[in-house]
Structures are given as structure tokens and as C-alpha cells.
Amino acid sequence: MLRQIDHLVVLVPDLEAAIQEYRGAGFTVVPGGTHPTGTHNALIGFGDGAYLELLAFYEDNPAHRWHRFRAAGGGIIDLCVLVEGIEAECQRLERAGFTYQLAAGSRTRPDGFTIAWKNATPPDELTGQLPFLIEDVTPRQERVPHGQQAEHPNGARGVAEVVIAVRDLAPVVSAWRALLEAPGEAAEDPILGTPVHRFALGPHRVSLAAGPHPLIEERLGRAGPGPLLTRLWAWTTADVTLGSARFALLQLER
Image 1 (tube, rainbow, N blue to C red):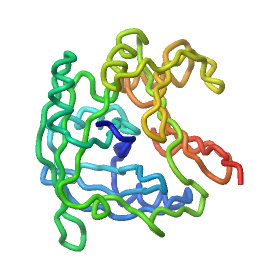
Image 2 (image 1 turned 90 degrees about the horizontal axis):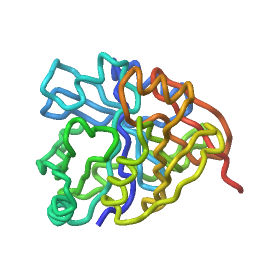
Image 3 (image 1 turned 90 degrees about the vertical axis):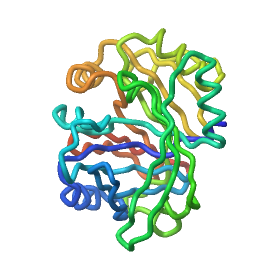
Image 4 (image 1 turned 120 degrees about the vertical axis):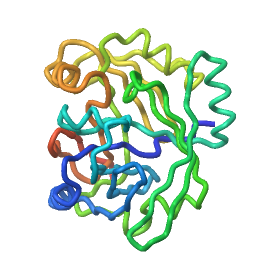
């Protein structure tokens, strides 16, 4: 069962510099730790359980599925969905025509505690267009910032929507329909003014966007299809651009 957006991967060239930059923009950033695949991270958690993962390579690893995005300037490069019963989900997706590769994942926190999970990834060419999946082995609260660690000076409260830029809506809409077993809805993005197809995913929304717009064209030309921007619920309204990553704070009613 697909529950909600778990996190968004934000590739940065230098982790410590990114931590300071995001803190300067009003986010509470929690050091995450190191992965055995040559990457390390820091996390920005929200009250809805989702988070942003600031990720950088501490050693070169061309075999890593995200390595190629370094040359494209990084930014928001991937989307992860929290799953209950990941093996069953992989079997369901295989019956629907998708091959998700199941693997074990881990991260060692700065305090020495090792967090473990299972993840499943789509084919490399679909990275950023379709999500990868995660299911915790160690308790989720050990992996995800919560409580005071998920409160932010800029008022950010949670993920409202992830907008994914695609070249052609039809095949990606079909893929998401199979993924979620839901039709979604066709609409026009009120800010971008371009056609989108929206899907609900727990408390969050995923919108697939296509059409002539400078932001969409920039993303497709620079890094190919993938996350264009993330809209966050907050107590204020603001546009925030940090490196190649774009965010929009949307005001909640008090």
C-alpha cells in the first residue's frame, strides 16, 4: 500500500554549504549521516511526516543512480513514497508492467546508530518521473525528523504538492494511474498556466506538468524529466530558490 510522499531528494554539491544555505532560508536542518554508497545527507522534516533530503557525494561513485545529476546542477532530483508491504507492492507493479528493483538500504547517523530500510527503484530512465519506494526496517522515527526538529522559522509545515516536469503527459499519466490505481484529474496549474494531471497521494499531491513554460523548459533541457518544484504549506507565502531547487511556500489559513 502506497501511503504518502516520504521524502524528496535534493542533490547539492557541498553538504555543509547547503546546510547553512537552507538554515539561512529559515529551515531547521538536521544532520542525517552517511550511506555506504558514497553519499551523506541532512534532513528537513515536516509535521506531516514528509521531509527534504539534502544529499551530496562525499566520494565519487559513477555507478550511483543519482550521480549523473551532478553535472546537471542537482536540485530536486527524485521522489520517494512510503510503502506498507514493499515486496507485495513490487509484485503488484510487476503485474502492471513495471520492474521495480528491491534492495536493502542503510545510513549511519552522526551518533553512530545505523538506520535500515528496504527500497525499490524503477528503471534508471524513469528516475524522477516515477517515485522510488521505501519501507522502514528500524522504527521510522529513528529515520525521520519530528517534534521540534520539524518546526521551522520560515513557517513551513508540510508538503502540499510536488510538480514533475514531463515531455509528454499521456505515457506518464498512464504510469501513475497504474502505480496508484487511481485516475487522477486533468487540470491547469493556476500558477504555471500549463496543463497538469494531478494525483492524490495520502495528504499530498503530485502534479505532472507539460507545455511551454520557461521553468518546465529549463528543467527538461538541464536535467530531463523530473521534479520541477515543491510547494510547501506554511504560515507565510514566498518563493524560495536554493541553487537549482525551487520551492513555493503556500499560506495556510490560521
